[in-house]
Amino acid sequence: MHAALEIYHNTQKYSADPRIQIEMKAHSEFMKTFNKMFPDWEVVLTEALLFHEDPDCAKKPHGECSPWFGGSCDIMVRNSKTGKIGFLDWKRVPDIDPHSSGKKGKSYPFDQYKWNKFLKYSLQLWLYMRTAERTCDMVGDPSMLIIVAIHPDIPGKHYAFHRAANLAHIADYMLDNYRKIMRTAVK
Image (tube, rainbow, N blue to C red; front, side, top):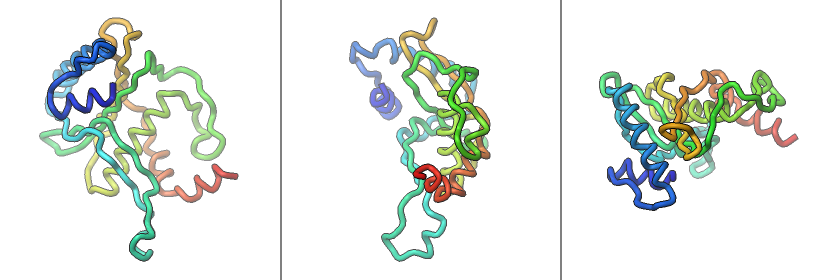
């Protein structure tokens, strides 16, 4: 489904694969809703690769730097009036319940939450936005971090979407303290 949606956003042609026709129709319906709700927002990139580098990179010899965080966002959108950016992430799951239970994190700042799918996906979107802001001098709009579930088992139009939870503080902590987090994780 992800590849078919990327192809659509680059060619405006939906996949004819019979195995994902419900998803293609659901995506079409979602995009109609999105365009009505957010007329100033346009898709600008699909599967954009984002990397956040070690802040000490400038002090190291050429070739000795590696990204601390890397990700490939499904959709980057831009507001045509403000220039701000946002991200949409496709999930092929039947449910993303923001109120479902999850496992509590083991160390700060993760121990502040019980990490269900909704929070994990929210953090993913926040990391994309913070990385784009820090490495590309872009300005993000937190209200345009949207998780889109597309699945045949979702009643009605077969899609649901949620704005991401505000996890800016955790995304910032992760990007600022990557080494510390990794050392804690491997202990």
